[in-house]
Image 1 (cartoon, rainbow, N blue to C red):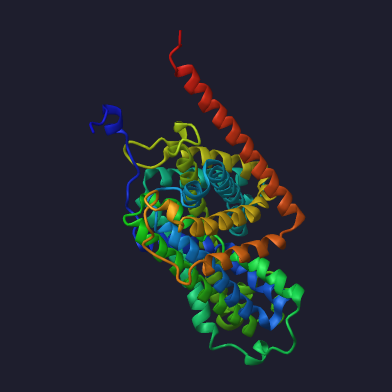
Image 2 (image 1 turned 135 degrees about the vertical axis):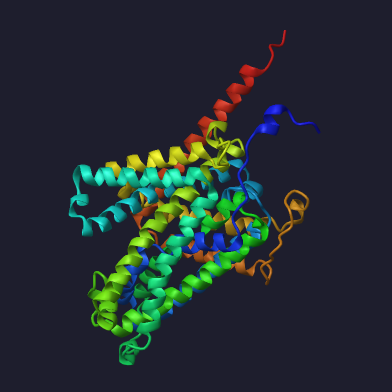
Length: 446
């Protein structure tokens, strides 16, 4: 079939990400700023049981990640859960998933950029408020957007460096701290309460979240059908090990861990002194910076996927002719995040992320089961990675997601319902507009 000049000249995304790049993206998104404060909250809820809770929720997260891995091994394009849902359940459900993924990435970017500005304000107090803070937030978002436009390889290098920047301090903290533990602090002397277990589980399942962005960038990976499953499984395995060991060290070295506002920094100061505390502060700053890059990398790809599949105007799917990146989606996402960051509305919008993640988990796990049906043979490629035990693993993953949903707060449920309703309205507008364009373009029948 002969291509038209326009089709032949249309730029496409560049496939430059390897499996370790995808793994770095996953680890970077899961290990955010929360891991540096989370040990205290977990200790308050679960005490000496907290390391066991981390390990247990890591296992539950692996069930979900395995479902992602199987369905992700069927696809090689940009979009991740949006594509899976579209293949299994149709356009409307897929639009809601894609919309929620993009919206929460934009809101999360705004939230994390404010955390980063606050961290920088510790060293430069002028950045804590007013014009200097607004200038710093704007400059950082513009810089990150520019890196993302410049190329996926450049973005990946920055993510890789920042991921190493956050992992190394945590590994040093664990390696030295394991020899400084007071075993008596780890002794379990009372049963775990149901309320403590529920609160810890809800906190941790979102603490382990973020790996769902890995398949979103599949369209820029060299071998996504093999690389995405590899990265998803390794991400959860590495993060679970780091978070569990960090909880053990913090619990075993810091008296009154539950009351600390800076648990890892304070624990590091106990057995490594001021230099150790500074190392953890550096890791937290690198973590916030890396999370910003991750939001900016994955968010626009969700918007691009919607446009690429005709669920948004093609304008949003424009690829830069030289850099081969989704330039319009990057600029639009950066602009929305900047407005949210400067307006301060990100805090209220960030509650949507709780329900968004559950929507993504539920539809992806359900897609894993549905796409196994013989009716889809020939319509989607067969998986290169197959989860064993039939539907057991994805079914258990769905139970995990529904259990989390049952523990969501009324505020989270309300925010999620509003976001889903907004997505439905946008879908209706997009469908009406496309229908109108087709009618206007049709020749008049006499």
